[in-house]
Structure formats: C-alpha cells, structure tokens
Image (cartoon, rainbow, N blue to C red; front, side, top):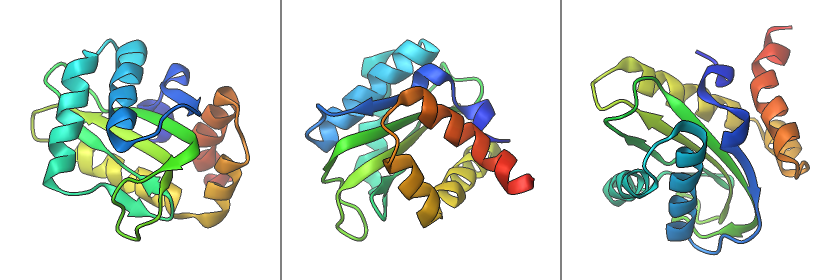
Amino acid sequence: MDLNTLLKPDAVKVLSSVTSKKRLLQTLGEVAHTAYGLDASETFAALQKRENLGRTGVGNGVALPHARLSPVADMKGAFILLENPVDFGSVDNRPVDIVFSLFAPTSPCVDHLKALALVSRTLRDQAFRSTLRANKDSSTLYELLVGVQKMAVA
C-alpha cells in the first residue's frame, strides 16, 4: 500500500474558509463525495462519530480523522491543507493545518491499520510537513504526497 493507491488528485485540497473542526469534517464529507462518490452527510456523520470516541489530532498540527463506511470497498483518502489552522483538540493542543482523512470498509481488515500507519509515518517527518505547508497548490501537494515514498526508496 502506498499513498498513490489511497489518494486521487481531486481528493487533495487547500482551503482558507474552514473555521472549525465541525466544518472541517463536513468539508471532508464533501471531498469524499466529489472524489469517491460517497454520501457527504453519511461520511460527515461517520467521521463525527469516530471523533466522539477519541480525538484524531495527533500533534504537530496534524489530524488523521478516519471512519468506516459501508459503501467503501477499498481504502480511500483525502488530504486538506488549511491556510488558517483550526482547533482540533489535538494531543499537544496545537491547532491543525494538515489533515489526512481515511475512509475504510466496514468489514474488519488490516488495510485500515496499515493505511493509518503509513500516513502517520509520512506526516511524522518535520521537513516533509514544512514542505507541504510551503505549497498552496492542490496538484503540487498531490505530487508531493504520492511522490514521497518514491523518494524514500530512491
């Protein structure tokens, strides 16, 4: 599994108008609808339900909201870079500006955990986070995200 299999170009966005965690999760539902045909309201509800179980703000300005959805057959992802960070209730109390969301099948599978681990490892790198933050173009961000593993292998 790699980020290339998780992301589509139209699932990568740069946003300036999001002002709250709730609005961010709603926007992720809209992105999931546009990119993958998932129901935006159901996706938002599933993300909100998961968030109520425990915060997914992992620190360093990064959040990894995720949810299981019945229409999903294979892991899907969405990436949002926020121009204006929002409070996400992160473990380090820092506002979030890098958001990588995962949408998983409802059936038990290890791919969900593998995808979370992959995204977490990728976004743990401070230099890579800085590179993402320095780019405000969605297509450039997509290329950086899908190319990061190729660079690590080379």
